[in-house]
Image 1: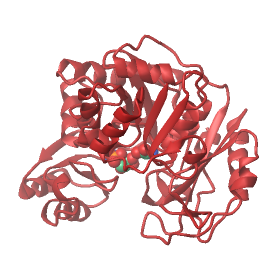
Image 2 (image 1 turned 60 degrees about the horizontal axis):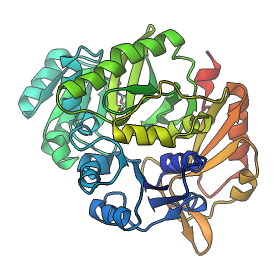
Image 3 (image 1 turned 135 degrees about the horizontal axis):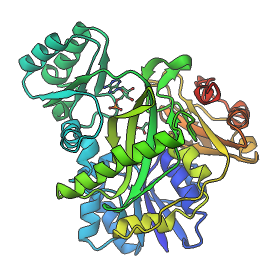
Length: 423
Ligand code: AMP
Ligand code: GLY
């Protein structure tokens, strides 16, 4: 069969690495892809948000299955367009993708089905939002309702910070129409973890546990990023907690979406806050996490393609996934300055040496080919992912890979996996 993967980051490289292992697959295309992906798939010059062009391509090439990586095409309705054209596609449709695309939608869903999360209120009026902040006090969390490329959440330690956030979102329109409405919620303390489940809209197939490191610097300091590293399994998610997450969060979410006439199929990403062994939802995403996908997919033993097809067809029967009994750790190598503006175009050295290492994959994210050289071209550039029999050996493997690679200004955290090690 022929598979098309939409996107061009580390998550899509990891998906293609896994899809390429399937005996069912003859050819993989990726739109737009990146130079690392080009070693496994044919990259097509169509952007991930050019839905009509992607659909025409899939029809012309008779693609059997399309897999969508990022959230923006999902919230734009790529699944609806493909399905209307009779094409098989993995991911939620536009209505279901609101679970990530609108914070108000997801908070209302959780309230309706008693899914544990922070207390909240939604506002469309600036003065009412400010009054609520004054009434609640700080710390408090302010969120733009719509998609804001991961920048729409303000964890405010003072009332002033919270009010400034509301001013930025509602008055200055920092995120355009994504800020027409804001969610203001209780600040939750605890440790974050990521939880993923495949679903066909009715049945669920949960994945192994994982955690990412969101802050840019060691010891979880500095601004939030898309993720500077990740690992699987995550020791904070004990077997008991895993069961509780499935029963009290994942199942009622999928059942609730179906009951509301908005069935969710694809992969559900639940961002969790864990405190005293109890999970609460921070947010949902309508897609695989990045970088979490990188360690998870390196650990996955089962063929992923039948799972993706079953989800797309509404026929998910499989009730477990086989995992390699190893730990996986991904260290993100980023451009110096990220998440603030940074310089691009520096040649990356050492990729060939790292490629020769066993139990190591260098997934590409923001790379580009310039005059025959692979250069940095985005914030998060590479995800160096190692496997090991223990967390410690997986960390050592990933950093042994990182040590071989360099470019001007490269930045990476030196403590990825430390939280898992200290447990
Ligand atoms: P989100 O985009 O909703 O994942 O939020 C980004 C980050 O903000 C999360 O990963 C958390 O670190 C933090 N965050 C969001 N909501 C809360 C909350 N209610 N309490 C504490 N931290 C939060
Ligand atoms: N690692 C966080 C995300 O994918 O949103």
